[in-house]
Length: 249
Ligand SMILES: [Zn+2]
Image 1: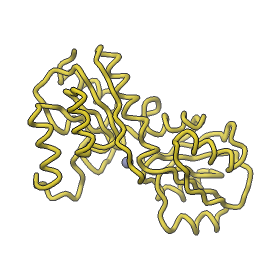
Image 2: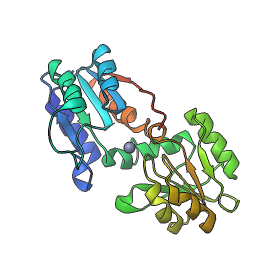
Image 3: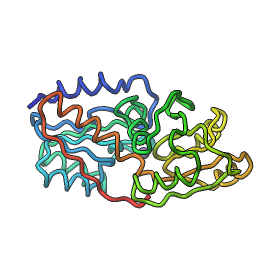
Image 4: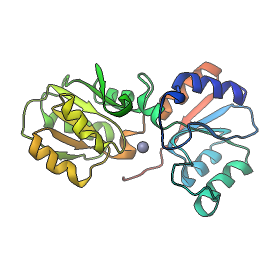
């Protein structure tokens, strides 16, 4: 068991949110009143996730996508009211870490997603150093890399083949990082892997010859939250469970 304040300072120390410019508040987003015994981690604090965590007996939630984002108007109405109400009724705490969770070199989404594919970064690129890049390792061809991604994630990726060059350098950034494609090219990537694809990336892949692989936003961001929550649980002797609410996007 741990006090909420102890858990909060441990996570702040680990993830260093003050060093990022983010789209929403990182850290404790909803303060519950219970000591921390049972932590449930997940990708997004959706209503389905919160309900599943409540059913699993959670007193504390740890997610990548929290409740509050820049651009919201601040009202607790509709779907947001429902999510917050579920937490307050059971006095449950919610921690959310966005970019700090993507970036963490050991427990973060990028580090852990890379590990799924056998990739280890030897450099960073792009805004706030969120992009990871390293040797292609076992993946000498794009087909081998796409196969490895499909079997690791249980999901068929969208592949834009580029000019068919052999792979030496692989760059990746989990989630909706399609806007990092040009930075990945500038950093020397032969292929860039992320979660989502938008219209411009198809043209960029054709015109620069660098391949682009979209593996799913949710699918690529399933690894950081449970890694941090498991580490937290080990430190404080807590129970931890990861709950994956399926998302095709
Ligand atoms: Zn995301």
